[in-house]
Image 1 (cartoon, one colour):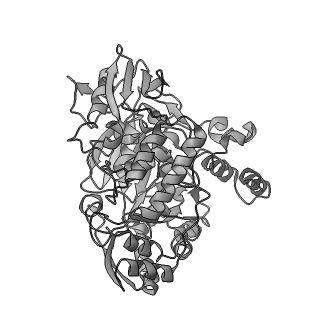
Image 2 (cartoon, rainbow, N blue to C red; image 1 turned 180 degrees about the vertical axis):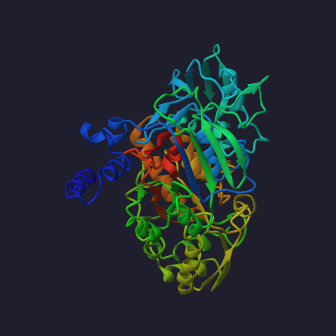
Image 3 (cartoon, rainbow, N blue to C red; image 1 turned 60 degrees about the vertical axis):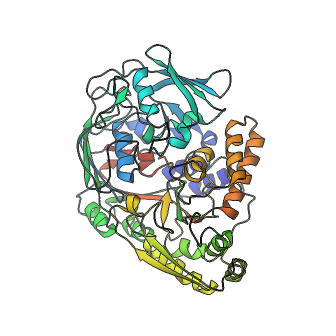
Length: 530
């Protein structure tokens, strides 16, 4: 039975809700097959209410967070940037790309040039009119050798950014990229007000909400932008994003009414909350995946036999069962999920195999291995538990993994990209090119394994420019295989985004899965019912 037919059957039998049906169909790329009668959401039928104050608690936030989108961000700041800033393009809840600050976009003679026509009349929160100069100044910061931007590897492919009047921006690329407009939906590439070609204000945007206060690692307070250029969003009068890293405290805040929405709900708590009539649990299929990146520039992880031994020493089904309670899928040591367009369904699934792991250790000249694995539950619910479970599995391979619990605060600045081996997670990206370029290309600032594979990088550049769909598919299939068999990360699970909200919160029928919290657009897409 085809995936869509299975979903329809489950809907008709009452096994899944209408909202779950729409979400799962969209995540599988089947939105076009959904009848119009099912696509009409209650949001549009009844009309979301305007007014009220919305409070959202996230696990991610650090005292090192900054307002400047160029710097490495936590989930809190990513959420904040999408709420207060605008980008040239955006990902819609059904996964499709749409113009945002741009009124339209199209390639020039070929996909090595892109032309963006900007909306007229957009104002920043300080009253300054948005023009092509602001777009150029905002994007230019992400280019150049000295740039610390997470998007540097993408923007380095831009040869020039020019304007044609006040409302047309042209970008000339070094080589063709058919997915380039998708990249411009990134929160890091938010458009900020410029002055004499420079960006100096980071607390001012043109998004649906205006920043009132920001306490790094604690909370952000926002109020609705009365002059926002899009009328079909921004329903609440004001909102607050709170960082509550402790899972129990986060749950208590929801149950007691201190907050209205919480994210990163662990599976056990989700099942318990679902039994409460006053709470709604939302389980969203996503591209989010959990990883254990090894620094391949440091021993012993510079030896691929060691990396393979570790990949074979985790029981993925056991992790999925005990940590995620089945709310996800097992990973296959590459970051492309079944929800992605070019997912390699032909690639053999890696399984727990201690004997084969021992063989790889022997090839590395080792009879046993002792390594330390850093983690924090501030990353995601169950991160530390997974390292403990992994250490138990690995004993059968002759590998001694010592789980090291590190502080939640400062994890992304003090542990990630620094410790030889640590836990990490990615929300995934809407395209294969974005995910591979940002997380695995040799030139990326966010290459968390410091992995460099010449064949992989050559394919990455070639696939980006390939217009023939079947050829592109073959390239991405091969890249997933290379990453799986040579890459530096144990990618053991794809996890659903599980959130919970009180019944006084209105939720659209279709919720995005490209990031948590409805693609980090929750504050402008959701509403208060009373």
